Amino acid sequence: MAEGKTKRRDPFKNFRFRVKLSGGNDYILGVSKVTGFKRTTEVIKHRAGGDPATSTKLPGRTEYDPIVLERGVTTDKAFEQWANRVWSFTNSAGGMETSLKDFRQDLVVDVFNEGGQKVLSYQVFNCWVSEWQPVSDLDANANAVAIQHIRLENEGWVRADVPDLPEVSFTDPA
Image (tube, rainbow, N blue to C red; front, side, top):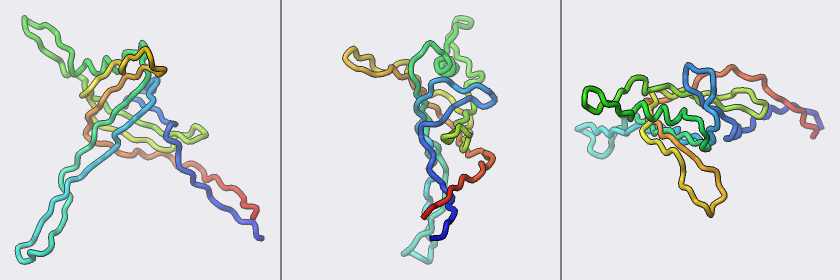
């Protein structure tokens, strides 16, 4: 049989990822789960006056689901500090006020292949913490890691360009 070359394109593993705040060089340590990458566009039905039997469908408003980050509980306060930017009351001149300075941040989620090379990158825009859970349920009868999570409202995401990696090929002996 003739020897042929075949290009292999295996899907990427879902556990090789890192998360960082846009503009920063350091990844947020310990993030074990990212959920919520979903975009939904409303459907607007339009029917012409002279055609009562059929309608035309048009795209309407697009909504982006919140993204949830989970990680094991440690002494790192990064999630808590971000959550407190939305809800951090201070007593000023006898009243309770909150400062919304810098509560929105862009987020970057990078996906890596088995060789540790970045193959996908998503930038999530104007994220802010709408839900903060500092520790999961505590149960003395369980054997699990304590998990904290933040729910991030956002204004959309895009797939960022990542340089193409060289194609991996192997020889098929058959």
